[in-house]
Image (tube, rainbow, N blue to C red; front, side):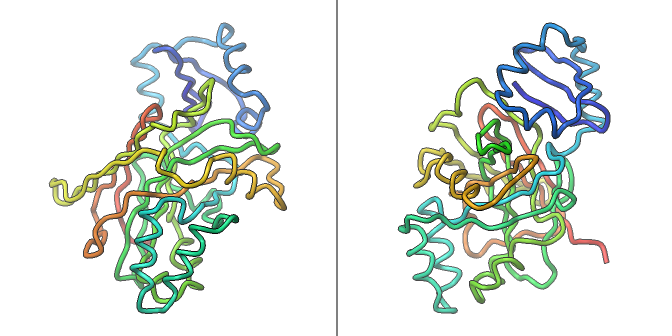
Amino acid sequence: MKLYKLSAGIVLQHNYASYLLQYEWDSLINREGLYPYLSEIIPELPILSEEMATAHINESLQPPIGRQEVWAAGVTYLRSRQARMEESADSGAADLYDKVYAAERPELFFKATPHRVAGHNQQVYIRRDSSWNVPEPEMTLFINSKGNIQGYTIGNDMSSRSIEGENALYLPQAKIYEQSAAIGPCLYVPGEPVSADTVIKMSISRDDSEIYRDETSINRMKRSFTELAGYLYRECDFPDGSFLMTGTCLVPPNDFTLQQGDIISIDIGGIGTLVNTVSFKPL
């Protein structure tokens, strides 16, 4: 099932049919046993025509987030460890990321409040004070207030590699700023956990030409989703649930940096495609 958050209401898509829900977003998605509940209420919901569902989604689609915080996990893939060691070589902090990759405790960091999150077909920002900016495509979990994974979405963890590479303590500035995170286009609520063979793809276009494309599968992650969720909820309460980006294994070459106007497309099997345009925060 896929839940699309709109400015007025929610569209539920299931088995090639679309339904309109008049529910409060946070109360709905934070419900324990979300998939069985949605399955139960489907017969009572008004059915939308394909044209009407498409119009609703295209005209008023919002990022699938309400009052939730967005968090992120780092160095969960070998490629991510290598990239962060490379960017930090001059600062002397390269060994830090090697140790984090091998450690029992994962790296978890705060990423965004809801108002700093972009949705599908919206802009993500790059920092003016960074010379090396990249997107990071990530499977993103929705975890309810009880710590249970209820759904999945696509995440774009925008990152200023020059800032983090200068000093590992600059991580918050490299990761947390206006529209440095994007999620969407929907919240995917399956009956079973997603397959470890699920593929993540990313492409970047500039001036109508594709300049980067790569893909990977989540089975290359060192850590499990339940492990990451468990650490996040050890000493934190999330009354409305939370979103957790789970790390990236797709890293553009070290000579690549995003430019204004670039278009980032991230596709995850079963969920869909998240598209964002790169810009600067207006002065």
